[in-house]
Image (cartoon, rainbow, N blue to C red):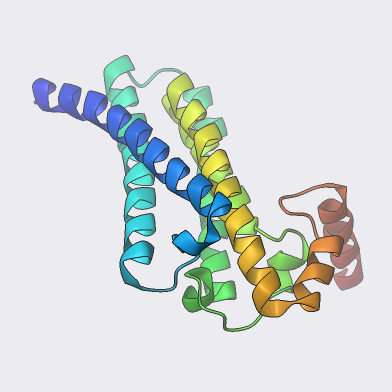
Length: 203
């Protein structure tokens, strides 16, 4: 059993690193060469490849973080008190975002530009919360490398976004450009001001 866990610990780290390099390279190339058509892609081998590599990275990161707990012990309770709520809440918001946006729109279908709800505070709220969930996981595991993977995840999302923004601008034109001008790519003071205003309005 120990040998298996040791193998998973090492293999998952390498899988995360290699998949990140491969996906990041493909997204960067696609940004430079749009005709490549790697992303966004609603179907076909490009869609399957992009999501396959991305899911490999995410899965490897989770396995590595859990293996870190096994390798270094359960540690202090405080890391769970801090990390578990961050991970659970952030991941819950990510799942809510899938439901709000719709799976088809999430996976690159053009079913309408969504600018309300959580998308009034950020153009990419699911990306923000996914990174936060990974940070929470790194805190739980007390794993510096998992926190590095959270930064890598942010970089991958940024490359996804740059490709998506070009596609959305072409598909939705002025409506998306106006949305870009008024809503932050991730989060900034406008996000909190709008959230505060909405809470006060409902109160």
